[in-house]
Length: 450
Ligand SMILES: [Zn+2]
Image (cartoon, rainbow, N blue to C red):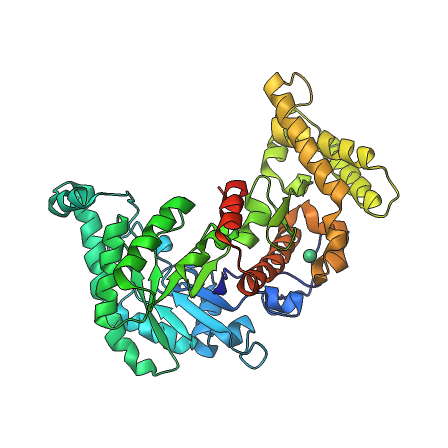
């Protein structure tokens, strides 16, 4: 099972100065920056996925106009500095990024210009042009029949998107033949229920697709995804290859092994470094499960809108907040060098976090107190375990405790890249020592992903 990292220009500045929180003045964004595989010195993933919706071009994406033009001109590998000679057998997946245009009546891309996009980008795999269906219900066969005849606007719209996705897939498969054997077309499944997705899968296989991608899974719970995959496998058997698009339950991957997936793409190990309230830093535990630590929140006071609002309102002086910030940073780093006690560092972090979380120090309700106690407990766990000392990745080795400090993109993304490294090893281990069912069930109960 291949782990494909969905990139969204996730580079960092290798020359960032963590003490002054600055990049060198001469830094050129992108050109002087490094992608995760460059920073780590190896690729923790088997491939990279680039969404057309992120590149933009036809409508605004995340890439600048000149980046989008360069991407098309030099191809994905050159753009991502992910050359085949350095990363043998690696894959470059493309999809349209249906989430980025879900509000539009029609996808902004045609099958023909998407084939051009994959051809220019020299992708190894590319998904057909799909249109996302957000509704999801587990339906019985009779409920399924009544949906098929229903005149409710939602049902009509779902059927329209379903048909559109399939007709695009048919056209895409034909037109993609001009890209030759180097390219694998991937047919995207969209549906409103396990049965409708299974029948979409069946149609795609009849068209001639040998590789299918299941779309619209990101908002679903793990047990719902299992029902979908079971329904699809029941319909098409074990032979066609399956990919899950935007798999947000990446750390529950062990329980998905039984579906015989060929690949999945995710960005979640990276994103969780800064979007999750608790599970920000990944560590291998006993080789079978991951362990998670909470990052230590010490944001830049002057860059933080909520804190600056408090200054305007007169709740705190700017000087007070900056003092709390620098004291917390200094003490946490001193703790890392064994020059300060943990409690001292912890007190300083909590002192700053009170302003951050509540906007006041006094008059905390019982609920507030519980909340801050929980933050204190999670922060203490991270500090006392010092997980960064046990990680041999380039990042933890070079920036030490700064990797667990929740502060500005250069730290937060580095923590995310460390997570990718831990996650990549986790996946590789699963492949060589798959868990038995009892263990994976136990693990799903314990999982932190929900
Ligand atoms: Zn690390």
